[in-house]
Image 1: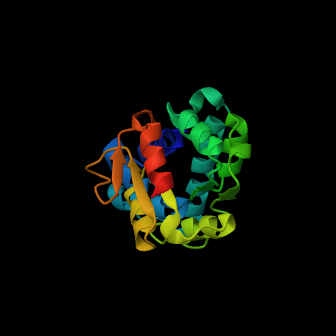
Image 2 (image 1 turned 120 degrees about the horizontal axis):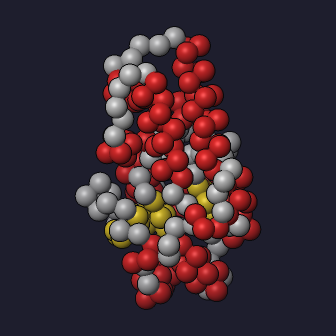
Length: 204
């Protein structure tokens, strides 16, 4: 799901309220980053000084706007190619975990019908360290009983790629290859991933 787009809309609207522009390119810095750290980056971009009380208020209002977007999500919001990859991995009985910095990961998965696809779900409610710390991935691998070096991570953020690389997991960048250049493999989106590549991963 392209929830990053919803995050961007909410952060952009907050930036407008604070009197400055926030671009999609700048939004790349927010992928895989906690909500609190994202706000800190946004305020740095806009050179805005704020009290802790103001920050907490903005975090609440931003999240409420974001939740209003995801409350309307359906299976139509699943990114092209994702179901094909999930179906093939399930057919091959490959255990799968979802790792996300978001505390809203579980309700989103339920809304789009993917909750039962994963053997383990690790989200912002389970971790104390944000990417590029690998905690979210190591917890997921541990839950699956998979050695870190045998784990494969699909990521759309450079922080997530760095997190996977820190514990020698296979990292697959989904998105701009120039941004995700540290990944072991790069694809523009899931539609570019074929079964031959998945077999290569499974048999490696």
